Image 1 (spheres, rainbow, N blue to C red):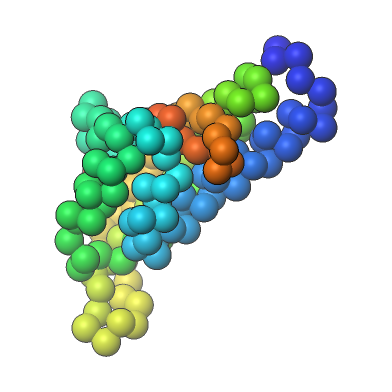
Image 2: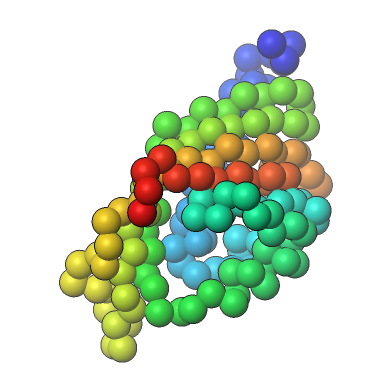
Length: 147
C-alpha cells in the first residue's frame, strides 16, 4: 500500500489512465511528436510486436515512429486499465489493447475494412510525475495471441 490519501491516489489513477488513453489517440492520429513527448527523456518503449527490444530515449522513440511507413491506418482500443499509485511521483499500470489495421486510401478516406485479424495485447507501464505531468518511464507491450 502506498500510504497516499484517497483523493491523491484517485487523482494519480485518473491522470495516468488519461495518459494511457492519450497515447493510443496520438498513435492513431500519427502524431509521433506527441507520442514521444509522453515519455520521460530517458523513457523506454517495448512494442507489443517486438517485446524484447527496447527503443530507449524520447528522441529514439520519436525517430522510431517517424521511420514507420505511412501506409497503415490504425485504431487502438484500450481497456482494463489498472493504475497502482506507488507514491506521489511514481506509479505502475496495466492495460489491454486491441489493434485494428488497414491500408490508407489515396483520397484520405478510411479503409472499407481492416486488413488483418486484430492484434490483442497488453501494456505494462512504469510512470513518473514530471514538471510536465505524468510520463511513461517504461512502456512494455506484448501480444496475447500469435499474429
